[in-house]
Image 1: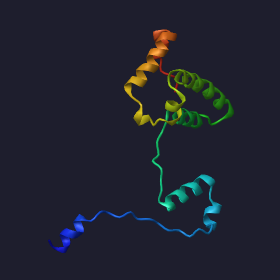
Image 2 (image 1 turned 60 degrees about the vertical axis):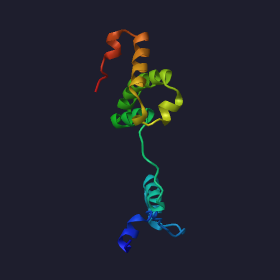
Image 3 (image 1 turned 180 degrees about the horizontal axis):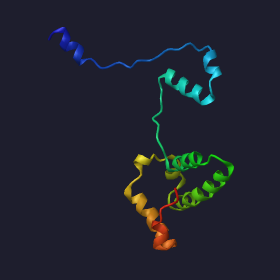
Image 4 (image 1 turned 90 degrees about the vertical axis):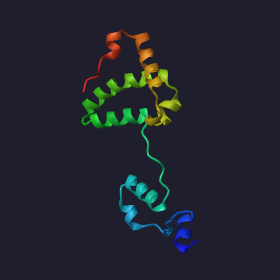
Length: 129
């Protein structure tokens, strides 16, 4: 066995960045969120980013709320689906389960719950844009 074959058989090693523990003045000038992201990047330990149902509703509400009047209006429109989802899904699924882990059965359960409480036309109505 030659040296090239031996190199190919070695286990890959993990690269670890070592940063000084002294506070970085550049990080202090950033927005707290940017500072947190940079610290995670420099530490080499990033948590996988995922989106949940609750986060989706919150982000949609924030995106559509550009004025206080619009914020109230969209807040009322989003609260109804949020309440419906809370009645079907437990807190764990709504707040902590990634959307990629949601199944067709979860969607069917929500649909069945809506159909049992409201008319069929209301259950299939598409919300205003």
